[in-house]
Length: 188
Image (cartoon, rainbow, N blue to C red; front, top):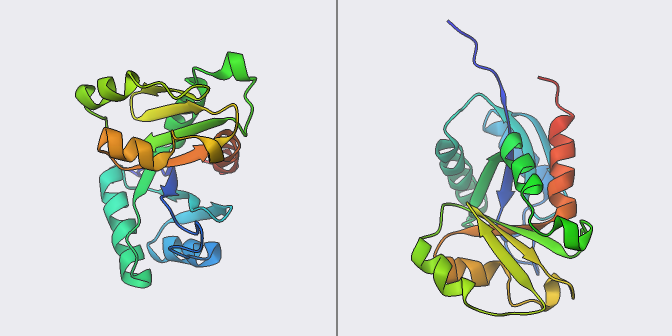
């Protein structure tokens, strides 16, 4: 029997530990992932970012498993978006705002989408103007540049979920970069 190469994944949980809602301690989240049989589990900050190793190739199976276990153990519904390390690197490399922002970690945000939004929904919001904030949708990522900071923008996670009709979770440049660094620390 051929050995399956272990795959490095990064899970992003939407909306946990925000304003006292959906509280899950990171040590408990780490334990939950380990109970599910994942290896190399590492969490980063309190907003539900988890690096882990699995042999499962079907990301949708991983999402269902994690979401169900969180509901079972914590009685809260949480959307989970999972990316392979290579996908996350592509997200950062594809940032259309790099040149004009100098990669300011507090000005650039990435809304990771659970699926491709419809062309109809994309065209509806591309016509809107929220200057000085700007966004660009590429595949399953919304790149957002907020010169006055994310706390002031209308282009937040709820906006994109509502307008694009897909689940999303948003992280800043620093968090995505750190998740890649943590993932790269695993030896294959």
